[in-house]
Length: 129
Image (cartoon, rainbow, N blue to C red; front, side):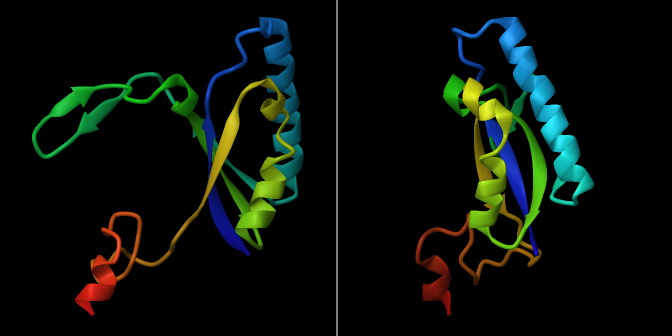
């Protein structure tokens, strides 16, 4: 079994009432509770609205993404594969109300400039070998 990070993205559908959205939130917490009891999901957190971007030159106020790309929170999925983690996330009741979910595998291995990774420019690690 592997662990995956699930990022909740987007905003609620603008044409939904607060009561409908609250119904989706309540359904989510019930679904999450069942999955957590089964050892499939592990709690993360909602994210606050404040943000800072720290670069080598300065610190900037944020957020810096379009509304559709906003990350509202995160939690963790334990699954046998990325596809299985996606199937689990596809049952989240909030999908029907405008949110989407990005699922990323967690790597236990430390970063290395000699191994391909998210931060390594394409092809650079292979060329360094």
